[in-house]
Image 1: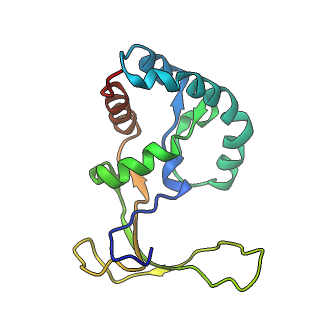
Image 2: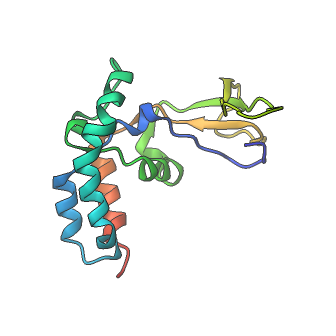
Image 3: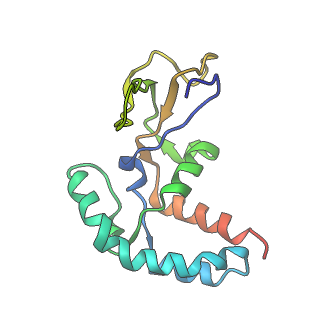
Length: 156
């Protein structure tokens, strides 16, 4: 965070606007790609996550935009975060925040990140302790189609 490099942080509120369901997994099955190796984990995630995690996520995000498919799939956290970094046009409502991590003199540390709005914009030159944060995905279908395109393009 303190390095002078552009940094993107994608919160749960944004990631939960997209969900991978069994229908999506079937589409990945039709790809002749290395992504087929993750199919067992994807199937397991679509079965477990709606029960173990997504119910709590939905309660925590009450009143906020979220995928209608959270009852039937899993949140593709890592892929959504990757897309925010490499395909930022798929996201809107970008905020720039100054961030800091309080020092920790003894264990256990709580790891809480402190944030406050920043005057920075996308064209600023000093990236130290500044993160960009997308609030919304532009379109869940577009996120999933982009994800499928990337997964299917990895040669086996």
